[in-house]
Length: 535
Ligand code: NA7
Image (cartoon, rainbow, N blue to C red; front, side):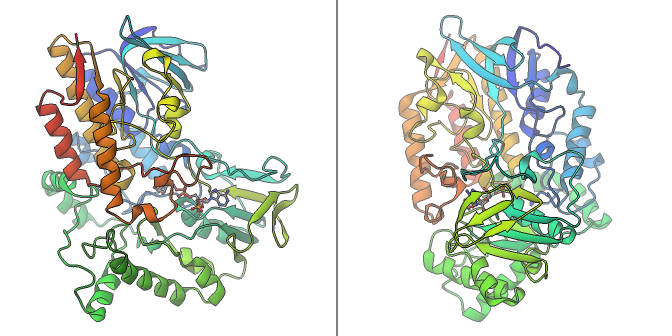
């Protein structure tokens, strides 16, 4: 049975993923009483839940790892360049053990509500076991891609075969051998799982609404020499990560894609394609995310790659995205496009033949019914806001966060929201978050929040919350930065476009990790400019 949390602590953290674990570690260092409440039965967050076949991180392990402990950094041994979900979960568990985190984590407990008591200046956090915990601070470390989404397709519950969502995969795994399988969705989860499922299944039909841009991962085992070199230079590398655009130290492009010859450009893109990286193509030139004409050159390059790999011409055309490269989250794959050359795999383009309903036997599109033994929903998440609005969070005057954000999320720096004192979000909407190496962004947010709490305590202050003016200005700035890019041109989950009825607002901050960090540091250095601090 889940343990009962204490009724009063200084800080409640929600979520025991990479954010919550690091928060707990830092809070202990401050001598504050802190607990973490976690719905799962173990640490890991994203890497606890997303156990679908082929699940991997698409940032390199040596970069997608904590930097706060040099011992951890030096002693931990990663096996692969792009580790599998089990390898990352192993790392999370290792961190939990090494820093003895589990004793303050309340597993198998879901936070359902949190309300701010204006007189006492405390949060009361309620759980699905009926417990209530009062705390001075509430930190939502609930992740950006954690509220899994089933599609609004009629009949989803009618199917008699097995139904899976990639983000709620059975721990014992699934053996698709001999089965007829349908996969809906071609984001990262689809792109990673489809090649693996195709190897097992008798027959696989992929239902694609929007094609992804996917680059080959070129995954491999890490070589001892490259690991040793990284470990010898880790401090400089970490510093470069923090100052970079995406939390990944990449060379800063100085040229426009339009100022070089087609020959030179294609050679550059070819090298980027070979590099096996999420950002290599996008950072080949300095205007790929701002100029449609420049982006078209990269788009043509990837389309040609797809046409070269995929033998059936119609399938190849269906796999070619029409939106600018990088404006939806690109994918890294191992044999994705090649999978469509298999005899047992076919692609259904839902732009031509949309799904009408799920039936007892399978999936019915406008032109026919497909029969399956299993349907896999790789349909993604209510991204960035879902995990926050799913909790009944009530700030001043009982206003819920859902109400406050009815026209789209409103935050200051993606860390806090007006009307919700002493509530912090880790990698919230309005911060670089999903446009970055998450671990770099997580550490930056946690460090900032820890400093803010320490500042309050040092100065005998009880609460902090952003002013509406500072928040409005930040939301405007986030929008302006996005408007100067091509990002809003795609119907992406960055825009809330995958959730019917969700306001179309570009949610992450596109100004880059380095510039954003500088802004956050300035705010702190100016005595938390834009926040009201009250005794
Ligand atoms: P994503 O990237 O949101 O992908 C979800 C996919 O499911 C995407 O192709 C969607 O098409 C498709 N989808 C969603 N709803 C439907 C319906 N109703 N009908 C047909 N197709 C649908 O989620 P992932 O889990 O793959 O990846 C999430 C992130 O994890 C990823 O970006 C990385 O950051 C790691 P759409 O594009 O909405 O047309």
